[in-house]
Amino acid sequence: MSVTTGGDMPYRAPRLFIGGAWRAGSAETRNPVINPATEAVLDELTHASPRDLDDALAAVARGFKVWRATPAAARQRVLLQGVQNLRAQREAIARLLTLEQGKPLAQARMEVDTAADMVQWYAEQARRVYGRILPAPQPGADYEVRKEPVGPCLLMSPWNVPVILAARKLGGALAAGCSCILKPPEETPASVAKMVECFIEAGAPDGVINLVFGVPQRVSSHLIASDVIRKISFTGSVAVGQGLAGLAAPGLKRLTLELGGHSPVIVFDDADVDAVARQLVVAKFRNAGQLCHAPTRFFVQKGAYARFVDTFAAAASQLRVGDGMAEGTDMGPLANGRRLSAIRELVAATRADGTVVTGGERVGDTGYFHQPTVFADVSPDAKAMRDEPFGPVALIRAFDTPAQAIELANATRYGLGSYVFTDSARLQRQMITELEVGSVAINSTVVTVAEAPFGGVRDSGYGYESGEEGLDSYLHTKFVNRNHSA
Ligand SMILES: NC(=O)C1=CN([C@@H]2O[C@H](COP(=O)(O)OP(=O)(O)OC[C@H]3O[C@@H](n4cnc5c(N)ncnc54)[C@H](O)[C@@H]3O)[C@@H](O)[C@H]2O)C=CC1
Ligand SMILES: O=Cc1ccc(S(=O)(=O)O)cc1
Image (tube, helix red, strand yellow):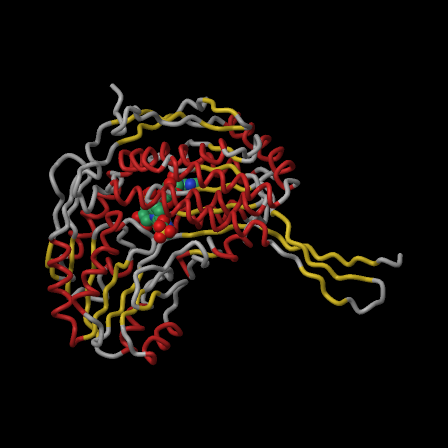
């Protein structure tokens, strides 16, 4: 039986794409792709064998030679055509995404739009990779600083926002002149493969984009061990990021790690409490809370606290939980059974450290659905205040002084996003300075955009994606001392 995507197209797990050709993976392992709303198996994904991976390494090395020699304007044309293709495939990709990941279709469509926007920005920037000439102290000489693509890249992206996170890596690498092997998540492979197809069909030469799936640990250890790979970009958990840093160390390979987060929200008394609470409910429960920069720890000043809790809980309880394909669904299921189990455990453990004001239960017994769950008066010592929830759980606590808010906010090992609500310029400045994070949104819930760097500190990882810094992470800098008189 095949599952249709809502149009006429049946769901099919993608094949590998290596050296310009699609092929089934020849490993003995495979994995089922599961619809998280129904737990039905959509299809089986074949895995790359060591031989497939060696073919991908040979292809990506060949692809690099071609792509690095391709003028920036030509690379830009391919990327912009890919973006156009992506926009044309919006509905098809969004449907695949909802089927395999669970998010509401409207959010899946927005994901495709954001992915297109992010690659477009990189494409536009491809022609602005400038070097510089410096004055040399001796006559007849120029000091020149050049930017060059770092080499073939291994890009590994996760299942929570599969299209954006893969497209952002692909766009940066290709704009810089790097070839790549992309290893998307095995749990949500088809939406990413369809996105990749848009850039293949736009004219990326053979070997420039390669796509593999497999047992993640086997794929990453095999590919990172090869001298061919010069840079690795990974988004996922801290534990896996640490392991990859170990694998990258012997070859001293460049690494960008975008790991977890446990983003604080600080709401001061002067904020428009009702409006802010409602805005934060949308941000918190988008993608069922499975975003690395999702607001998770809500610190609200005492004067605004009771009202914030009431409005936030009321808005959260009104969210319609259901199949992402159904009209009117606000929040879909969690993306996989691991996440549902983890959230149920987290909720059970947090009951001793706070009060459930809404939610707290699984929804139904088929599909990975969980209620939007809000805890108030959560102890700062609760395990949930330290460990990333990565799901539909909001933790609220009151604070008195700005210094207390900072202490609470900085009390995890993560440092990715943060959100501050106040019109006081003095408080805004203090929060911007003292929050130990990669980004701060003031009176806003947006911390990641195409034109600005996104990255974290401490356990949230290192390096940047998007913005000039994101492009620079696929470039190395060469100094040339050119003596004309010799
Ligand atoms: N920063 C982010 O956007 C993400 C963070 N996470 C964090 O990870 C936690 C656990 O989720 P899991 O899916 O179990 O995380 P995980 O880190 O095991 O998996 C995340 C992604 O990494 C890949 N992966 C796993 N092991 C790998 C390896 N050795 N080499 C290369 N890729 C590998 C997986 O295929 C998956 O797509 C979440 O609760 C969340 O805290 C998970 C996904 C995305
Ligand atoms: O989980 C990491 C993550 C998720 C989403 C986005 S974006 O806001 O959609 O760009 C960025 C990072």
